[in-house]
Length: 173
Image (cartoon, rainbow, N blue to C red; front, side, top):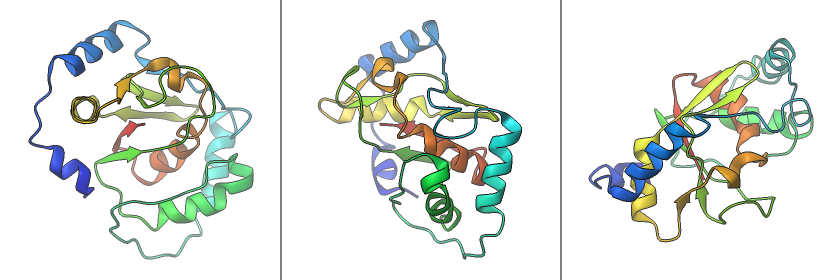
């Protein structure tokens, strides 16, 4: 598993994260795709076909690793490399996905507060309990929907996470 996640299992959810969870449930509960149709196909069949063509012929043995580093450009440009890395990884039940922020929108260090991230072919659930533990444990980290609304970095990873571990949850930072 992920070392940081293991260490945080004993941290209690405090009022700030509980409040953010309530707010996120009242606001837009699912993060809508921001770059479907540009960074990857926006139609479910086209996305499935692309992910299948990238991933189905992979023959790597999966490994347990504490972290992976993958490119985040459009899938037509970097999808093959990203798919190979995801395909070689034993994916834990909760994945913390870190990425740079390419817009000025929202907080600089932010966790997406929505319950899930929608994709043209499904969704990836957020682990809001783990997210709350991180917000309460890391100075400056906060729930912020605006910081993630137009950002592509994490979104382009989700088709691979959904393909290789459809039951996995994520925390997007």
